[in-house]
Image (cartoon, rainbow, N blue to C red; front, side, top):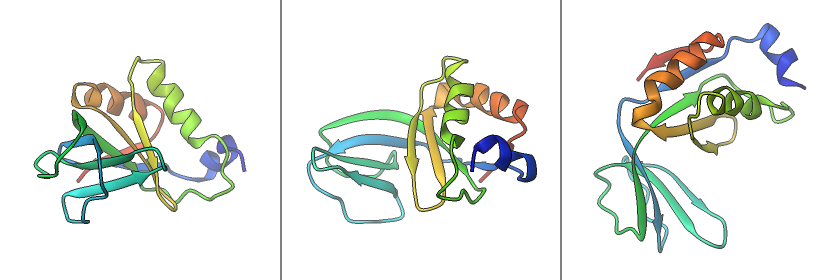
Length: 131
């Protein structure tokens, strides 16, 4: 299903997390804890997304980031959702880091861009709340 059809009948909801996060390259998979948002392993490197005070040893790190999670359940056959969101933000020169879980997409951006990103998404009829 193309995103244009999906959004006609579906309210897109998102949540902004209040906490600040870091994106770090680590040498080993850290133990899961409340401070860990995501761990991505791709065979070449291990990426950790965690609260700023995570306490893990890192090889490289970027911070601070804010997370916007899209709370609308997205079907696996949906085409173009992330393309739509990333184009909206790219048109405003907002860089992002995207993570997808089973049925949810998350975008991270430097905290300095959060307010503008929220304005852009709200203008696109995304209902945003803070958590």
